[in-house]
Image 1: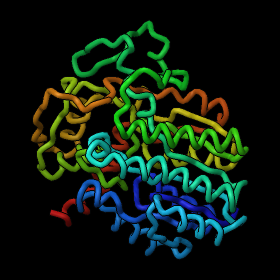
Image 2: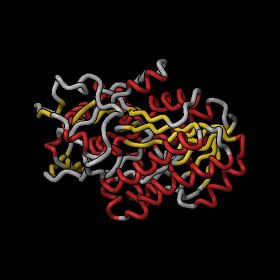
Image 3: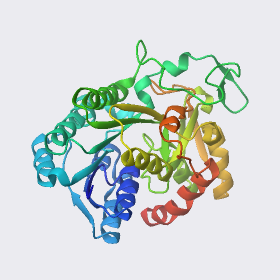
Image 4: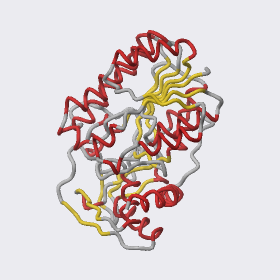
Length: 357
């Protein structure tokens, strides 16, 4: 297990995982072609993060490959061969709104790109642990059909419901609901990853994440909720709230805690697994609650506006139940609560935002 391959290596999860794997003594090949700049503009570019990792770690090698380029992925995996022991697939087009503008690009990257990588790994390193960063958007807007109640600062599920204490588990249906095109492309990839585990016996896993965050996130309005919100609060930039009175709830997980979960699987893989992963109720917040916390940390008011129309497929309430993962990997625990996550985003991001201004 001497070589690891990380796609989306300049993104939040990919970059954290690349640095972690180097620290474990592995050589890491990072795939990233800075598509985030194409999706969301220069403010979301991952170039700075790739350069930073390259400067820090001699065992990190960067490859500029588009996930839609099956031939190049095949050549890369063939060159690594059986030395390839870990694959972390974090590359994606991550936005609901953007997917609707370029559906072929979205599906090509998220679904076809995942198939390209799965097949390259199956042919050249079939025993590798294959970790896929899926999303809770595979459930579409099904969570909005839960019995929700409006509170002063958030929506919440009824306290007598089975999901109240621990959140939503993997039993939730993916059918008869609106996913957004992004949710559909990620669901296609999710099922492919499961199938390569079940049909071919590969060590695959789908981590269906909620809001993943941390200081390494290049947040933008269309992706990266807490990182973008904190950036707006710190720099005085305007922030738009979309629908649900700003009371829509997310649970949040720091990328470093997610990396610990991924490493648990890599260390003892199980074929075809699927896990919801997130910070749970203790790390949950609504948009308006997050705004108040950001204002408290930055010491300045946020310039917020409200648009009544919510984004298509947007969850009103999502809290992840990670019980299934913890049953398989009982040593896992998360270190970051919500306040610690926001402080990390602020302290890490402020020097970069100041340089960009």
